[in-house]
Amino acid sequence: MFGAGYTVSVEFYDLLQGETDRRLAKRRFAEAASHARHGILDVGAGTGIVTETLLTASAAPIHAVEPAAPMRAALLSRLAGLGADQRARVTLHPESIERAGLEDVADLAVASNIIACLDPATRRSTWEAVSRALLPDGLLLFDPPPTELPTGREKVGRLGPVRVGPDIYGADITREPDAGFVRMVFTYHVERDGRVLRQQRETFELWPASAAEIGAELEAQGLQLVQAPHADLLAARRPAR
Image (cartoon, rainbow, N blue to C red; front, side):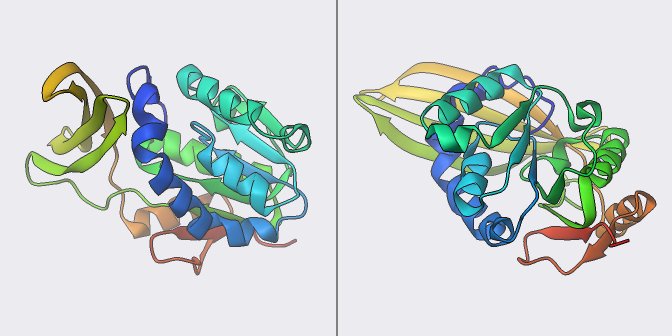
């Protein structure tokens, strides 16, 4: 979830979401990464789960963009556990993709769990920056934002439980409409012997957009929607010269 502080979520993210995210990353991106030859752009690299998947699937250099300091710290910790040869292929950009100034560096760009968290203006500037970063015929893969607002407050689901020693970690997720966006609330809790030791909350904003809106925004930046490799992704390509 891009652009938020993550000061709460970073502690729990890999523990509660890491395995699911790793499976998703392999299914969604590994095949495309195996065909990348010049470079891969990882927009909103987070704790580095997708970055590690890309490193494993490809021999190409990777540009990992992560402006949130808490997530970047987790990403660097993950990179520290990899071999020196893999770390040497990663360039970490500690700013937003719009400010990274990347041009013609990648034949694949991925944006996992990000686009929904960008307000419309930032989303459009992100497409522009990705278009500049992609080489001709380069491919962009991303999971789309929700297409509409929920009708009211609703429970989305739960994360966990995951045991660490005597403690049980988990989270409850709710969402509700709020002034044109979706307010997602993650309530994390740690229990021991049936007693809640800690409970912390972090809120994120998701911005709905229809497939037609996304397509028009991409086209305005010279990116053409193409058939995605999986039903839960959208794909766009920078035309070959």
